[in-house]
Length: 492
Image (cartoon, rainbow, N blue to C red; front, side, top):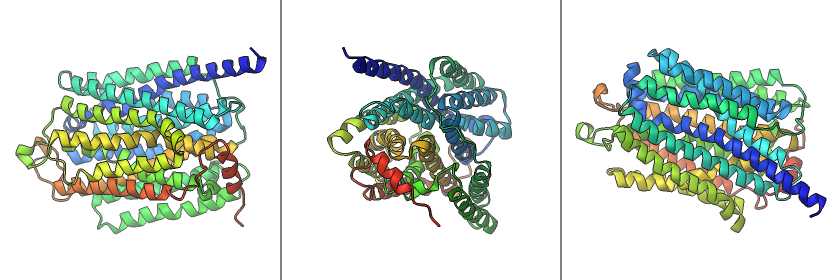
């Protein structure tokens, strides 16, 4: 065996070891994402709030997630992706330990939002894998396969979390049930600390604090305006003005970043023919993958004998729906590298987005029975799994070398913003025409659920159209050079 072959085998073995430990991290992330969903109605009853207010939990966590990802992604490129994984996990663990021991909605809401630091895990992991595979042939394919494996671990955790959460909430006090994911996050902290090796050759540099403040102000104003819209309704002029201010504040941020030698976010990436549509796709995909979780749970738990719609499921029955959806996501994530190799990554992404759109639009005529909902979520899950695995890997392969973590983080940030917008829109929609029997079941209206399904379906199909404009050679090893060149010109 030649020395180069031995070195290659050692490198691949080391990378596989890292991916294995990171798979546990994503398993934990999946547990967090799936565990709470079957018990959202129980949490609402425990905190004494309206079922529609469950969307506040989702909305605030998405808002904080949008704030932390840019900073942690850039710091990962600068000082090491593992280091930022450790920090974010410690913060997530602390917040998770607060949830079981409070019945205050305000405290629970704050801890729930801070728990959202886990959203930086997957972008940092993909960037770490991309950096560690730097000297390997077929780097883009290796990263895509690793991403699929990590997403499979994530969704496996979500399945187990949903099933276990659904079973436990039917038999144990809520505070004991909420301790389970907290203990798992603490274990995850030590797995990262002792099992994951740091990414080689961090870029160094300095954090663009001015850029961070500007983008944070923009995101706070934008998401704050959305929150006001949910609180006061779409007739509130102040809410619209605050939301518009958030959008306008992106302009000084972009102008500042264009003048920086080491920007927080290289905004030129949005002009890249490979990266621009990917970021927009991530935002549109966030509408369904993040914004529709709570409405799905509350619709399933609604008693049709009381309201005339819904499935009237128990916590465990609801978790079975989620479990089937997540199994479909695992299948989609694992099939993505195979199908993209047989066709092309771009075509595979287009097909995945179309599946999400078709699955949600099928809810319009088919939502009256348990079987119909299962079939719809199978179709949505296949497409969603492929997109969750593909988008950060595609961004990594097409990004400039010094912006790998930032690019993968941006797919998550833009997806989070899409989810935050959807959470606001869906919260308002579910309150329109809602019944007053809050203590008996969901407060959402059937017309509100129709709005959720239409918006999720149309945005997914719009993402498929956008991906048609991505270059045919995008997301391969050579595409990274093309994207770098496309991002290079300075706007004067």
